[in-house]
Length: 139
Image 1 (cartoon, rainbow, N blue to C red):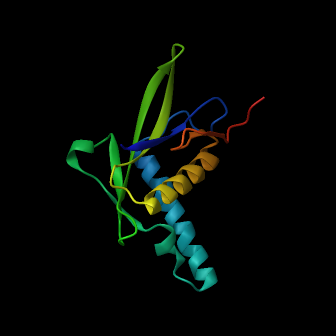
Image 2: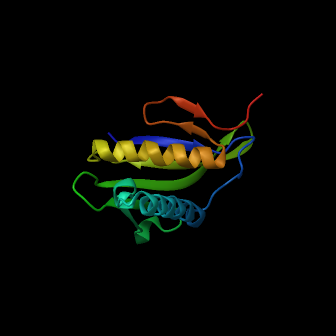
Image 3: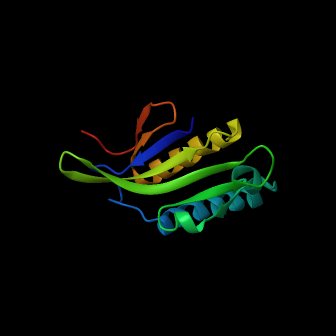
């Protein structure tokens, strides 16, 4: 059965919602940061740190895209955006889905990407295992 993690934008988050294009920009920025770190270390870490290409399909246009693995340790991760009604308020989120045939490497990278995005956006992260991490300021 597929597993999902959610990055929920709550009070105190840096953004109220995120579009797919903005999400792709954040992932590309992450990849660029890895490549700069790789240059400083003299090691091609960027390919190991972000072993995916960003792919889209016509049926997912505007709703989701997927990260396709570039080596056998990684297959793919599906990432989409959505919203839900909670107590008469609309809450936006990013959903990260590991399909049934995803590898352990995909799950590790999915957790890594979720934590990075949650810290960056000061969001609430619901992990694949059901646990919640709070990166938003709370009182």
